[in-house]
Amino acid sequence: MAKQLIPEELNELIQEYLTDGVLTDKERQVILRKAESMGLDRDEIDLYLDAQVQKIDQATDAAARRQKGKQCPYCGGSVPQLTDKCPHCGENITAEASNELQEIFDKLEEALVNLKSAKDIHASKATVERYARKAKMYFGSNPKVQKLLEEIEMETVNAEKKAKSLARKNTFVSILTYNKKLTAGIVVALLIAIVWGIASIFHETPPSDESIIKEQSVQVSNFVKNGDLASADEFLVNLSIPESVRKHGTAFIVDNYDALFFSVINAYIKNGDLDSAESLALVYKSKIGNDLSWKDSSCYKTLKAKFNSEGRDFSALQSDYD
Image 1: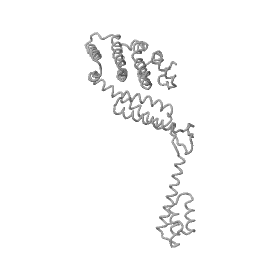
Image 2 (image 1 turned 120 degrees about the horizontal axis):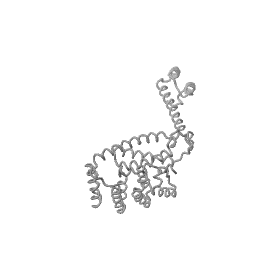
Image 3 (image 1 turned 90 degrees about the vertical axis):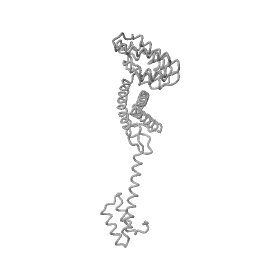
Image 4 (image 1 turned 135 degrees about the vertical axis):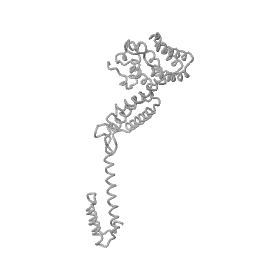
């Protein structure tokens, strides 16, 4: 029913009852009785009242949305429209910050899917570590970021346990499959390593630390010479430092393994691939397990100088002894 067909007296009553934005059942009945006394159709007036209430509801929702506005990427708080500064954390809201947060979400969610499917766990973990650092550094107060990081942390632990379990069950199968990518000389070297392993089972004389390290150096050197950094990286990530070597201390590990890791990390640096260099350096740092020995390594010194010269964040590789 058009507004102009409603008597002015009735319309004033309707507007008075709608002043607070709510039409109670009692108020509706008063209006309908008034309309009937004026000879108006009760159903048409009832429909008109519904339409008026709906308009008020829509206007209220629109006002609420305008008040709520944007969401702060840093803390997740609500930021009113036409405001570029978060009233909760004080950060300036920019399109670049929102886009960066979305990229972090996308990368972490992709890595989470890969971790759950046990797909390329080492690469997924490196991606997680890289973007998790950015997320914690810039958006650590955002509840969505915190929840996602907690989920990924649990999945990382589960994925690593699963990978280790599979590795123990399929050691010989994995080696034979991996050998297809290697040169004939390296295949022979791996077979010798297997023979050493079998010999140790029967308590025969195990290979010396020097022999083990030399064989590992030969394999990494061949990969680097052939430009196959991906295989060299994979070999070092999966490299297990023997307990007989570890018992000499972390300084001994650096003295004997620094050259292996440095040859690949330095090749990454020359190729301009600092992300891969950083990821492999994190693996090396974890294998050393001592910040003081890590600080003495060539990898640490070279990467620190390179990162500082390019203004790149070095916090993940930093030593507590700096």
